[in-house]
Length: 266
Length: 266
Image 1: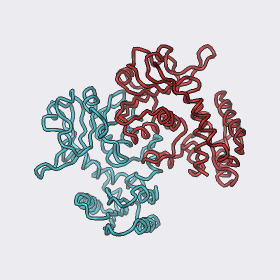
Image 2: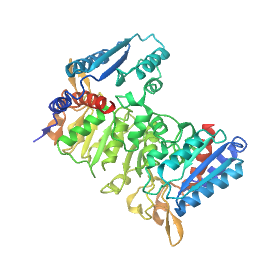
Image 3: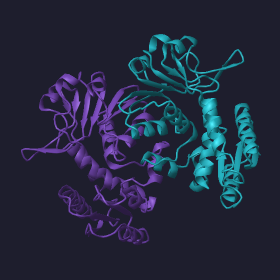
Image 4: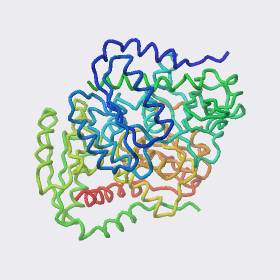
């Protein structure tokens, strides 16, 4: 019997427990350009903030602005006492130096935990972490999945997911393998894994023949025939011991962790 | 035929090429307590600095000082124009909060690249890196070892070696597995590895039956019958394609990278 890791339900529990505690805090979201998925994500965050009584400022900037205009806005928000957290919605249009913009956020307001300082603290064993990896760890905790001594394969090596997640899993005693597009044969690293965490946006990357009853966290998001799907093909579910659904797995956890991070920063 | 990765020779080449460029720079080394290996390492650094005309200040503090005395000293050195780089020799006696002390170093003088800010920048893809992992990457470069698409197993998950090295290898396209004391069966991750990097200080951890002609970086240091040895048992050498000797492999590279980092910071 496959157990479904219900991120939607857990995120609602967490947000319920934060209600009242976060009222009156302020969050600023900066969106540059018109990436359709980014527009949707910022709107989800805005609605969640409204629901919780969090003061929300949205800055939707034209992609023709220059880097310094974005940094000036961030500097102003760094000094604005109404604002406890600042997030820059990713991805940014190509012409921007993402790390330079992110690093202009004061680490004390870096609600996404994407400044160099905060990622470095995480690497050194700190608890403050980016939302998606934090949400994944929270799912393990909820379902009493102890990662110590487990073989974990992560298919993603980004600054937002793969690298911070690896450091969090190492802290908890997992043996961690990180795969990506240059990995020649991903199956070699999934077949004996106890836990597989995938976040590539390539539907069908993980198929039934690549696994032996692992725990699967599917943080991939793509669209097939206008339906939101993950990285796993349909038949993977029946062969896994635990699996996150897509949607309603990792996605809602990410938003809950954003609110939790905002509370942490205040 | 096993090829020896001659760290001593390469480090001498690198230091030779830095000669003249680093003269007049200033390095401060802080040593707390009387760990015998630490005393030796600080002396090696002092001698190398003298040889290169680098102004060297050594602070040997009693382990009974409190954290704030160490931090006050670092603050003073942060503001001292003669000093370009500050290093705190590790390990520190247990009672000290290592990360708090390291993070009091101004990242612009953090010659070991161990502040949160500098480690975070590395995680995000930056080039400035701690000395040991940097020295290992330099050995690969010297011997034309391209890690892209290679399966690399690192046996060490520290902030100084394993985690920064993993991020550097991921940047170069390697698939990376990180093992440590909680890994149940290390052989499972060494047997098919193209490259093994070990830094545990446990002589005999890697034996002949655990490998198939890989490239081996042995950054382990321990003493057996008063002889300095690495993590590999004696018979591993004949079965590896490339291997670093111990001593004269990774060790001298670390000192060369310290000097290179000092130049980078000026």
